[in-house]
Length: 486
Image 1 (cartoon, rainbow, N blue to C red):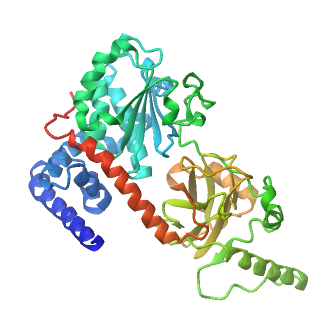
Image 2: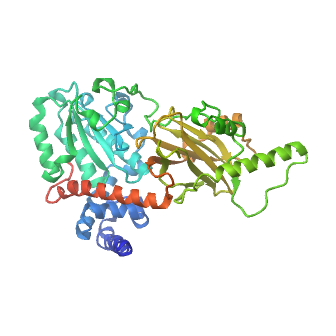
Image 3: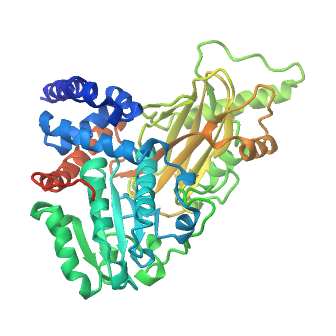
């Protein structure tokens, strides 16, 4: 059954590509960005997202692609950057990404009180929405987003239905499958009539995506740690620019950080060998001989340490899924699976493999730095070698689906040193364009002895089913509705 579904999906993707090229690109090539056309031929997930949104009806999918691609060229989406947006608009803090909802979806904040209806600035504001969505889409590739309409302290001069409709169109046409829900906070009663129009744009099947909340209800969707004080939350975040608000990733507890009481003995052993124990050569060749300067005592100590590490690493199940990046292959590909507090297996493993001919520096960051201990969190990996990174919750803190990890990597010059001081200086100087980034979500497993592949497949199927129910509701409302921006 699964094989048939995969074959049917592949046929639909192939047909969509062939017909779009023959029926649209040949006649409208000047209306599209060549990079989008090329990506359509290479990115199966992108094609599939449009197909799914149009219920696998190829004719409707082609129309949607045509509208979406023309919009992307009109807005120069592939070239949008900070410099494309007026500085005053970035400084205003009316639109930005920050935090996660209880399902682990990223939050797109729209602070309505900062929006004043003005035809002179509306295009810049639309570009800012497109900038954030494209930035997110390139990093997260299909993971849903929750829109937070914060309408506190909002007046009539902030009502701009053209802008609201544009935002809805972004999810209905331009970024299919990305919308989780729209949470509307503290909407003034005077705007009830306006949002009846919004409901009509969404359609009756998708009205459930709108969540009208006050302080009493909003915590059903977002926990207090990601809510500002005026929503009853405890998030100390205050928007400022520059720099650009990023993904809230921070340095976790360092290698020599606090020791969790339940792991005190093993943690002390970990600290003593920190930075050395996790490098394993992938090649079948023997390890290079020890330097002539290494004393017999040091050699024996090193052998004993390696045996201890090998024994320790055998307790971890190697992840089976792999993300193949240009510098590193990262396993697991998308989710870190932690055991529950009850199962007792709370640690998990990230395996990095250097696929370049140079040393690759890497560091690990997380959205919950107070929760996790990462070993090593800032180190390097030799060509053709792999590094095992142990991630463990600190103390009795619980893993949350909202938590994220970011792997950052960059190639180093052959002459560069790899000590702490050299790595610190390297990260200060390396251009952002040279840095590879990959994000991982967190998942808690109840079984004491999880099978990584089985769990991943099961979680993926469950997630897809849940998402499909939601997306189909929203996509259905697209039928018969004109979603072209005005």
